[in-house]
Length: 612
Image (cartoon, rainbow, N blue to C red):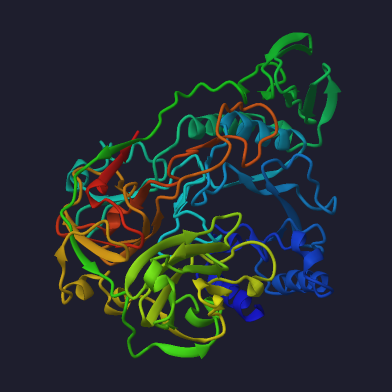
């Protein structure tokens, strides 16, 4: 760890990126949210945190170091707050500024979970609460949503979208626009809706390229912009000292900042969760909605109220941009290749795959004697599989017998169904699929994935037979993965046939032209089951049409927010649309490859564009 940190700091210095070198880096962080884990990590936890802090400072980065949620951060490292609210927080020394390093604008989406939303009125209220108590630094998490491309989504069961209900959504775009070059930037309308847009005119005669960060989410983006304008107006008083607090009602207070030069700013707060209040401050009357704060940069004029949203709501629209013509290639579910290996008993999945693939085949053989009664009665034996997660697909003698899967709160699963078997040797093949590695918590090395058993077969003459300890043959990944059918070069040698969307464990490919215009592009995968997506060889992530459970209903901005408070999509698919960056696309001839594990309806897969 020390070698890594020293290497990164050295690289930043060599590139002149720290503030004292004229660069943009004003802070550095070591560790993240380790403090809450200390009680579970044993006697070495506190000494480790202390060592990490001192090691970081010794790199002589020349900027302050912070440790998030680390109450015992030693001087001079600054402990900071992460959360939905941080007005309760104070650093562990009066010499340290009060910093909010993660102001959570929403929450992540899990496959099978409802989609969280945080009302902007409460977000603005939380920030104003922090500033009025003397908070000096706010960093939003997330301000710009993102996408967990490839297999980078953690969790497990974290969705591919990491939009986070952020003020700028996850849908970015990049577009080549020769006409803009000719206009000399005078009419740069392409990126007007993208606050993160960057413009570059190349000098080698190539057309101008415009990179746009994402679509703004209104009214969230505009309301937070106005909040920070108001805070900026109050800055001369805010930086001059601590506030004095005046009670102006049962639930209402005034936080007043004054400077020696006469600057004055006031924050008038109403903490009641349902009732508005009319208060008197400095002889003037002010109306405060429930659960809100008004900012008075001159102690007279209320220029902003956290619950009064003036920006119009502009929901994003998903627009169909064309269907697709498919060909299919079926994965061989009844064959093993030279890479397969045999072990006694069941093994943990990640210890075999080392995350080279989401998939591990577990294969064993069961001999059925001619005297078995089920051969005559047709009452097929029951196969029961207990797995640590995250999903399994079962094949007996090459025939599919269904799937089972866990969820975010309970990744373990049990498969139990009758399976058709014949006299003689029967091949049981279980495809175990992992849905991301743990990304929070303790002792990651103890988290298990895969079929750990027991695996039993019941309904035999002997009753129940335990298959767990017999020989099992293992194969990492799928045949299509080893052939590289998800890539442009690997898909060509494969013999693709007519589309067969309903079949499980099948690869599908189609070619498409980039949708006209510059709007961000997505794929509607709501008609499919579970799998992965590649566009021109780039992995757009895992998809899963997993229906959301949760508590969806009316949502009031007022009152303490939690990730379960304002949810949508209950009973619907957690994630339906999947972001395809325009930077991956050519004007035409784009290769789309889909690996479908469960089976679905290919006719419903549609190219989309996203607009506001």
